[in-house]
Image 1 (cartoon, rainbow, N blue to C red):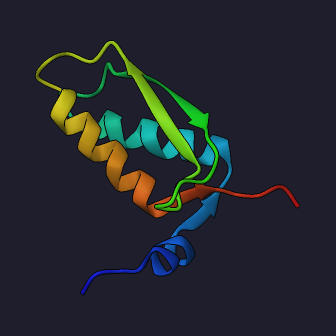
Image 2 (image 1 turned 180 degrees about the horizontal axis):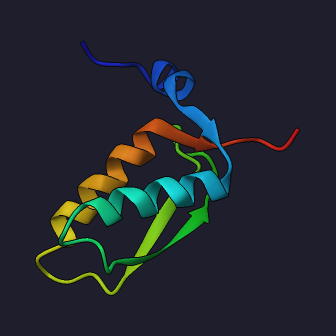
Image 3 (image 1 turned 45 degrees about the vertical axis):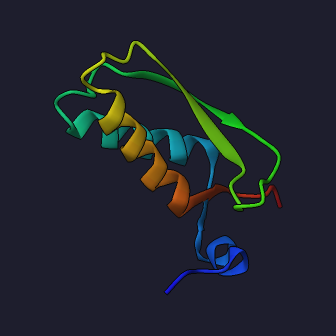
Length: 85
């Protein structure tokens, strides 16, 4: 069953930028090939897919690119930057 854009939007958990950074850091740190990946979270305008942040990765070894990309994609599907109250 495919989720509509609306369903994906409402299914994402709001999190602060620091919370997202921590989740990405822990997830990359658990994978042996991704432990040394340096990254930065970049807030972006909301996309059609509902995301409002992206990530830039530096120091990614060629053997870790695929794994790091998949880890980040999974987290991007789950979290949105929480709107300020």
